[in-house]
Image 1: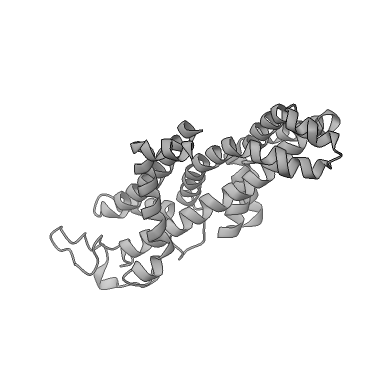
Image 2 (image 1 turned 45 degrees about the vertical axis):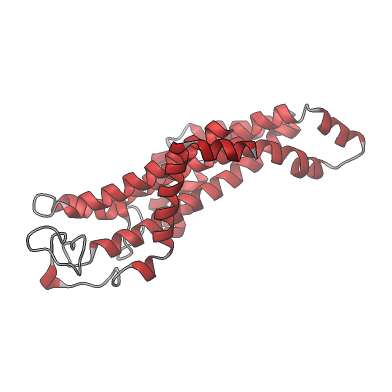
Length: 275
């Protein structure tokens, strides 16, 4: 309760929470909020400017792209992809890393040595190059992208979970659990995991924004989700090609990326201060 009260008094954290929830809401209900289909093309309306610019059209509030598709609709659906990738990759990476880290820290010895050498091996490969290589083999796609980003980011969670587990397993309540004959599984799930989760939750929150940026970068390079499903990075890449005549094609997707990352980072900072 004290942590929640401290978080509620943190104006920066509350601002981040509001921004994140608002964008998550619009992403979740994109089919209801969007004025039309993200695939719908209207060639006579190609590169229509935002409604406040001369030549703008109120039915396309943020203008259209090079195929006459509504920018607002595509940004809303792009936010869905961003949140899906960010949350999905963090869940995969966090789950793998937490399990490996807790097991490594709790059992120690050879188990710890093998698992940590595995982590060191993973760290020897730059994450972005490893991601690109795996996607090149598996192919583009939303599920492949989420799985790859989750797989290449588990080490950070593992190291933190291991460090926390090494500390917690020396506590008196863990020794008491050993004394009454509790199994290792019981001790890990009932005593170790609850005590290592708070710092991992903070890391996971901040890493959601990192995964969103990673997805945007890969989509910008043409390695993200397959068209016609819109992603913010893909829209940014397309907008770059027509920026001199249609600035809104690049500016609005860029602002959407900035806002979602800002909101999540502010929220993560607030959680870190509360912890």
